[in-house]
Length: 169
Image (cartoon, rainbow, N blue to C red):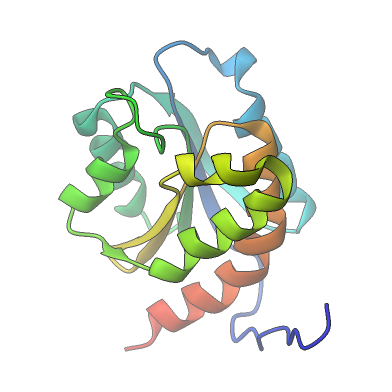
């Protein structure tokens, strides 16, 4: 892409990721989005150190995120599901209530890229990035195509640099 400059990544080595799918209807065997995220993370040379499903409820999402960020091995979390506008879409609400700092540019960039795939329906996603306890938590829609787009074009190129910055004292 003309004018695009790859940021200098300050962190050496692979990252440890958590992949959390929020759902009331899918099982682990039916979790196509989670599988796409895990495969892309591993293919890029990083590690999936936690992975699972939880209910579409604020307490369940917060419990999972808190539990995972309480360990040193989880350096970034990617969630799938719960970013729309239905009453059951509460991932964003859960992260906001945890006091996470919202990184506005992530959602904006995601919706811009999504527009090329789904047009104006890209506005139906509240996808966002929150910094919770100095860990990035990327909240993505449950759509496999949306997860593939975000993990490949935004998260994997950006996460190493972001984690490095968040670790500075």
